[in-house]
Image (cartoon, rainbow, N blue to C red):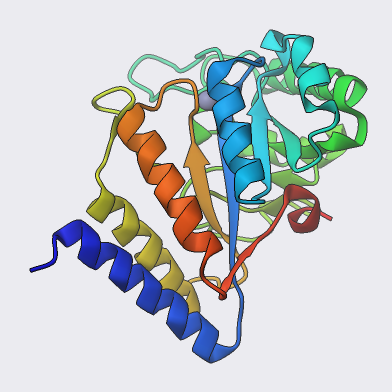
Length: 257
Ligand SMILES: [Zn+2]
């Protein structure tokens, strides 16, 4: 008898077969959050991206940027840089869930922070920086969203199926859908079956028209906190997806043209 995990991989393969039968590419993309500088874990992550020729978008925290990251990424052209808030500081009001962009901080201050962060990344990474905001904790006050285009942002990325491809004029939203980390046990793994079930559910909802088919399925990683079980799953997933002909990886430059 096959284990539940083995069945899950099989079902994922069948779902991707259905995309192949339909003649449509199953588009995926990959985002990693909380990036500040190079190190062993980032080496490992970027190594995986190159091994499987899979584009990777790093959400970098501007105020904590270590200059060595600029050199590290210089020739690694598979890797794009997105903006992860400004300082990844919590400004939530009492009783509110963690957020940097909103809460007790006035919108004008948040916008000034974002602008400062934008200039840092633009100056350091030139066109490797894609003007896409990844709000820390995947949360942002809606008032701020409507001001992002004025700063220069052309995209935003949070978590779960987007409600609207354009939450503000000129601002394309493409989210991530699978976060394999179990945040109740910091850095732990949610498990193979639950992780693959999330992927299948999203792919199936897109394929059958229940959800927006145009939003690529996004994988979210956190290289600094994820444990070995998450790393192993990520390695297996990249291998599995890379070997299926229906899978098409999109880079940030293609998503946010
Ligand atoms: Zn974060």
